[in-house]
Image (tube, rainbow, N blue to C red; front, side, top):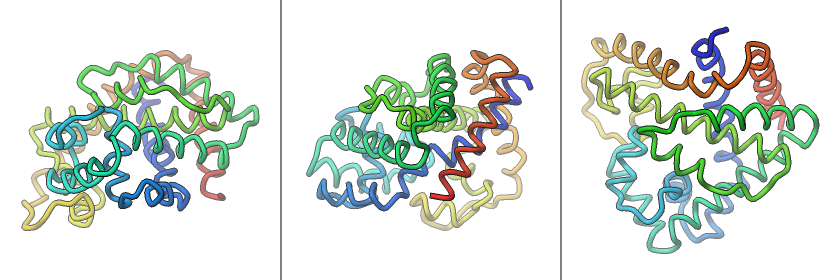
Length: 246
């Protein structure tokens, strides 16, 4: 596989695994311990790595979530706890999930090593969330934790690349969500209120943006040989099976 093909093959696995910890009941309990809602924890836990910035900056970095919904979550959390503290709590939950679900065996160690090389090689230009997360210190050095954090970082890299590609395609973030597999349900889940624009003319542009996303993200995978790329893909598939069983 070429690096671009490897990026395309890894993308659905990384997108699923990189956010799986966020749906864990233990992660949601952490939000209650901080005294904030689950939505405030999601927004600030994901964007808090940017530091104490305005909600408008967060909305621009997240891209696909409606600005009003971002403001609701960000401002609600900021009244109770600093953004970086929420981000650190989010990262700790990611590590906890990785240790519990992926374990500390040889497979997790190898997965963490390959992911780490890809993350290090990734180009963070125009991707502030990815760059901010890559700069965050990882609190747990165990293999399962490092693998989970590696998937979180690559997920943000893919998300940042997709946002750049969507804008280059002439789509708004809302149009990209509407043209995606979840359609209007996905738009509503991201806080966008109807009425929505027609989807038909947007699908081709979104498919072009998906291809450009793979091209942008491929730089991360050029750090791996062909054999290592195939190995990474297999390890991600095995990790998904373990995560789903958990």
